[in-house]
Length: 328
Picture 1 (cartoon, helix red, strand yellow):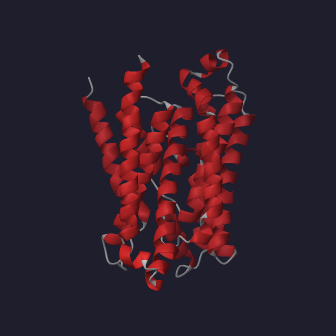
Picture 2: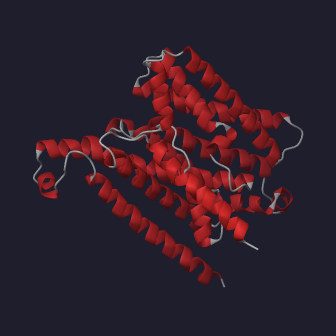
Picture 3: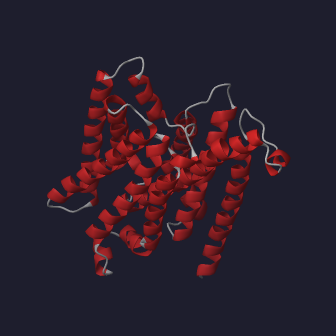
């Protein structure tokens, strides 16, 4: 009985992978400087420089970050049993934004310093939320959610206070631009450590995916299956946070990818199995690759990536609401 259910999901994964490959190739060609395959094969200096310095790092980062954010969003929704769960539900996005603002204000705002500070801010926010949740007597999902909301509000307040002290002409503009997200500064030098951290987090999540599925049955049922619920939840949340913090530290805040892609995967497969998680990641890659191509090609100047993902995400949520209203 399992094969008929799994086969469509696997077919969808293959189709999504092919779409990602096509978008990956298309992304390599989008930009002001036209790239020709013949010039690249002939090792034309300008073509080679543009390809390896600008296009390839940016495209690799878009595909990887889209996949990572979507898988992390899928995990958050699975752990919290909430289809609206996203990276900012436990403060990772606001923590990363606060960390980036600190780097811009007090450490010169260099790319490496900002990335490290944003990563540290995201991880710190989630650790603080987990500590607060651990203090409470009831170890329930609501405790984690409320702790995350509290930390998110705290980080937002800190970010607003930092904006208030920023130089309006330079520092404030840099903070605002970072919070809108962009892949424009992608370089080969920036890729290794974010890719390593995202890879470790993704590997951990897929290794723990089978016991993670038991959490969807409820805490009591999962304990009956021998699953250490509280420990597993903390470990998985930390892995998902590692992924998100590593991603946004080099791209800035990118909205809706971690919300839309898991929804689409479940709508298409109707399940929370490993194939659905993989499909969500591939859909996230496709969405971010497409959004990045649009950001570079729609106007004469580059559009911040979160503007496009928000324009895509808001109608999707409205459609979901209307769809739910029509269901008898």
